[in-house]
Length: 206
Image 1 (cartoon, rainbow, N blue to C red):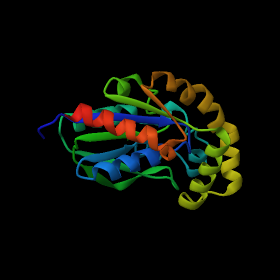
Image 2: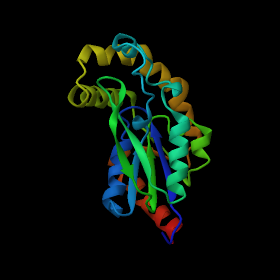
Image 3: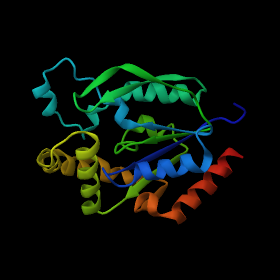
């Protein structure tokens, strides 16, 4: 590539609209220019413990993420290398046998609730974004996603939210917004913020 890749971190609470922003940027620039790397792909493989024990894990704590592999693969992409990104099975809380081959792109977007929490990742980023969305809206979105896409029951989503998600948000996710260069209210629905972000990306790429 003639232009060094730029890394954009998008953090925010569960259901805040991080994915919508990433998809908007993917639409703006096309898949040949932009690749989205999801933090969720880097959950630690829990195949070494029973399924019952896996369900009891706190998946919103920073320790749930394999930050060493995450950081290593982002560095590889920045250097222009291809990576073999893991694919996570949310039903069994294990990594699948297959992997996803990802080539480096001009724009690399890292998206996840803890994307700005880890200093090792922040140091790699050219632009740091935090999506700030009201708690009630975020909870409704999470409920819909987990039930429809991850085969969860309504009660299990509620129990997890009250037991770990809400607490981890206050302890780790919310404080990370102070590392952000840009705070975007309401996620992908904020067209002004998307346009400003596109202008900043174009300036860096040029």
